[in-house]
Length: 638
Image (cartoon, rainbow, N blue to C red):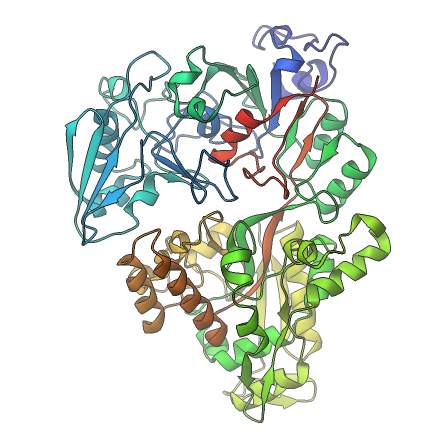
């Protein structure tokens, strides 16, 4: 059946019968939705569009299938999970879950060998036992098969694999790497483990659809829309033989993931009881639904409602193609001091932004580990403009934005200083145009009328690449306006292909993100290791994630190399993280602005017990692999 007809005539797209069961006219290709009682079924929005190849479940190969259809959340599994928030108390330590692993990773002294102890009694969804052979096969097959997702990663790092018994796997590495375990540690996703007994019979893993998928998760596939707009999963009878089941019994008997839902329709569907979890809304849409529907909730109990993603939005300077513009840190700092954090917050998120003056997102445990601990350093930080030294940090900007939005939202805006800082950020740089001009002059720039000229005499002008729409588009537009108003001619350039152009280095400056952290753990290697100069592509060549600004420096390499030689949970890792933050403050290779706040909304009509800022046991954003733990904590609202 076509997608429009499905959304019009089935309960997934329109109406629930009073008895709480799905109903509606369906053609033969649609599942029998009457089999799914509403009080036993959770319905989740998947932010993916139409899945062009919905029968493709081979997640280890880019074959056009969906990834956040429930496949990576409910069906597959790997060794560890690192929650971007606090994690479930008693089930995780420092946000880390032992999943298929029975305990933490173990390295030898020089980090050239990693041992993973595995759980006993885990079963694949077809009843076969999980063993170390599955883990070894997963890595070996991908090393031997170029074109698979993790092929080059493993081939570059793994020398050999040992399986001394069914519950132990040992990786011998080609060179020291204290973060090798993160390849099997889910943040958003990770390397999922393959069922050896399935893939070893396949002639060509690059063309194998893996349909139906055989997994180690607590749910197995029921059915999916051949048109690629929904996927239905059933709780396994043997859910307690899965790592998820060891955390707790997942309460929904069925889970339905719906994709290709417009933002407006998400609101309608939740109000009609046809969605329990919305991945993301516009700020205006989130404000509207939580105010009009008392059964709905966001991350914060009041304004700003949104969940701060462990992803930092910032101005990226291309340090290759833009070297003549941004090669001098005084120029980069001048651009930062021309910006008004209040204007950026209001223009982008309507005030619901969580600001960050440092190059670490203000989410998860980072406010505790970085923002709070560095407040004195930031407050006392002085910048030499060439004429004077000036303190450039304002710790009260979050309070000021809260006061602004309070005029509209009243008591919905928190007043407690701690709550305000958690929601709006710990502060940002002062807008100081006089100091910015002193820095430009010190860097050799001159002014002709209102127009700033570069040291070579050319007008200081450039395009600022932004997404075609959304909050980051709004943010980029107001940034470009601020610079233009202060004599630097900047034109916002909306680029539908922004991801491809960032990878290709086909831009001079952009507003996007290249800093993504674990969130629930203070280690910064998830993004920082990729900043090493060894990974910087030559100009004109594609850049591997995540150093999209193509910035390299000996001081940065030194910090990264020290982290590589330090254990993941070693307190020195946090100290080195602070060194990185201070270095980025001095050099300003990017301008940090705010976390990527996601307006995830949940309905308490059928299910309750969702994570929130007071109970941050999981990330509520629906396409993350670790969102699976939510299903063990919620309960029926009836």
